Image 1: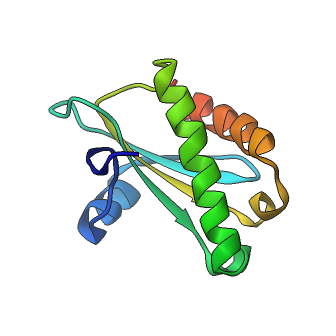
Image 2 (image 1 turned 180 degrees about the vertical axis):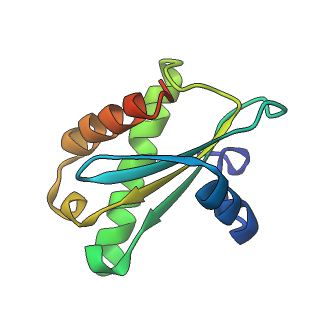
Length: 113
């Protein structure tokens, strides 16, 4: 995923976290903030230490990024938004297809698709 599509700075993360609207299911929490002046979406991914050690957390982030790339290639994601995806503990035991299905569900609840 290109750097232009990522929320990286702490201030940007906090702005989405505090001003955005949240939606959740058992595996993910998603915060969404409208950015009408932006030409494409940006995403921040967070996986807490309770989920597992570093290799487990990095694997979860890779699976989430891969699912987002597939959604974007199909032009399913709404542009002009910043959003954060926070993975919960059950994602550590999930396959890529289970993560993709759950992420699809929570993004539809958040009206990102």
